[in-house]
Amino acid sequence: MHPSDNPLALVVRKLNSRTPLSSADQEAILALPCERKTLEHSSYIVREGDPPTHCPALISGFAYRHKLTADGARQIVALHLPGDPLDLQHLFLDVADHNVQTLTRAEVALVPRSALQKLARERPAVAEAFMVNVLVESSIFREWVVNVGRRDARSRIAHLLCEFAIRLNSQGLMEEYGCELPMTQEQIGDATGLTSVHVNRTLKALQAEGLIARNRRSVKFPDWEHLKEAGDFTERYLHLAPQQAVAS
Amino acid sequence: MHPSDNPLALVVRKLNSRTPLSSADQEAILALPCERKTLEHSSYIVREGDPPTHCPALISGFAYRHKLTADGARQIVALHLPGDPLDLQHLFLDVADHNVQTLTRAEVALVPRSALQKLARERPAVAEAFMVNVLVESSIFREWVVNVGRRDARSRIAHLLCEFAIRLNSQGLMEEYGCELPMTQEQIGDATGLTSVHVNRTLKALQAEGLIARNRRSVKFPDWEHLKEAGDFTERYLHLAPQQAVAS
DNA sequence: CGTACGTTTGATCTTTCTCAATAATGGTGG
DNA sequence: CCACCATTATTGAGAAAGATCAAACGTACG
Image (cartoon, each protein chain N blue to C red):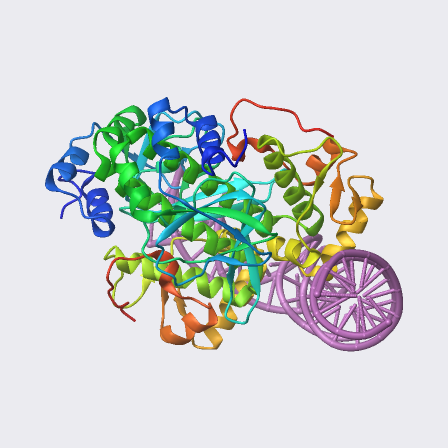
C-alpha cells in the first residue's frame, strides 16, 4: 500500500483492523477532503488553547502530545506513529487542551473537522470505529498514569520501549534488527517523568544488563522477554487485533 | 430531580450539559433497560480481564478506576462522582483493561452493553454525546499523567483536591462549607503516586499553610485561589459547560 | 470494650534530581 | 572536505524529595 495513493489509506487500514468497516464506509473515509502537508522536525500540529478546525492524521514520521506545567516542565502524554488515525481528541471538543508536536519530519493529512463530524453522523459504523480508537487511546493514557505513578525509572523506561516496539510492530514498521527510536533522552525523560540525566544512566544500566542494545538512534531488543518483565509490560491495554509477534 | 424517578436521569442530565440532546434522544436513554444495584463500600464494579456485559453508571456514592503493577502497587487512574455517565470505556472494547471499584457505598445502574451499542448506532446524537464524554475523560487522564509525572507532592495533592472540588461543584454536590472527601490517605497516595505517609505529611503542610482545613473526612477550602495556584490547576482540561463558581 | 482500620509521628535509607563540566554528534557554511 | 556551532549524550559529586520501617495513637463500629 503506497501512502501516496491516498493519504488516508493508512488511517482506514488501522481503523479497519479493530473495527471492520464495509467498503462503502472505507470509501467514505478515503473520499474526505484532505490537505496533505509536510512538517519539519519539532513543528506544532496543534497548540493548547487553539480552537480546532482540522483533525490531523499522521501519514509518516512521529509525533507526541504534551502539556506544560506552570513552572515550564514538560510532560509527554502520548506518542504517535505513522498511520495513527485522525486526532479525534479535537473532533468534538471546542478547545485544544494540549499540544501535539512532531518528533521528526512528518507528513500529516488535515481533514476539516466539520467534514469528519458529518461523516460520523451519517455513518454509525465509522463513528463506532472512531470511538474504538479513542477508547484505545484512553486505555493507553491510563497505563501511562500507572507507569509514571507507580514504577521506578528502570521499569518506566523499559515499559516505554516495549510499548513503542509493539505498536511499531503492529503497524508493520518494525525491522528485524530493532527500530529507530526517534526520541532524545530528554524526551524519553519527559515521557516517563524523569530527568534526562537519569534516563541516560538508566539506559546504560539496561544495556549493561543486556536488555537493550543501542547505537545512535536505534535500539535492539536482544532479550525481549526480560525487557517485558523489567517493564512490567502486558499488552492487553493496547487492545490490539489478533496478534503478530515482534521481531527480536 | 429525584434519582429515584429514573436512575438514568442523572446520566441524561450530565450528557445533556455538554452535548444538548433532543427530547426524543433523552427519552431513548431513559428507556434503556437497566438494573439498579446497591453496592457496599469497596465492591468491584468491573474487574480487569472481565469481558464486559454491562455498562454501569454511578447513581450515588463514589468510585475509582485503578490498575495494579506486577509487584502489587496500586495506581488509581480516575475518580467518579454520583451522576457520572455509563462506563463507556467498556462499551466497545472486548476485555476490561482495569478495575473499577466503589469508594463508598454506592448505587449503580447496569445497562446491557448490547442495548447501549444499539442505541448509539440508531441515534447519532447520542453516540456523539457518548463520544464527548469519553473525550473529556481522556483529557482528564492526560492531566493525571502530567500531575503524577511532573509535579511535586504538594502540587499533586492540591491538584487532586481542586479537581475533586470543581467536579463535585459542577454536579451540584458541593456544600458551601466544603465537601466530604471519601478517600483515605492511602487512596490519595494511590491516586497521586505517593505513599500514605507522605500524603499525611503533605496534607498537614497544606493545612499549616492555610490552603485547606480538614476535619475527619471533610475538607474545606479557605483559600481557594492559592490552592489552585499550589496545584497548578486550570480547569480547561475538564471541558465544563459554561461555568459556575465554587462555594468556598 | 475490643478489634480493625486509618492517621500521625520519628528515624533512616534510596532514588532521583540538581548543578556542572566534558565529550560526542550532526549539520552548516565556507 | 573542513572548521564551527548547536544539540545531545555522558559523567561526577552533592542535595533533596519521597520511600521505608516501625511504632503509637484515634476512632468507628460490631
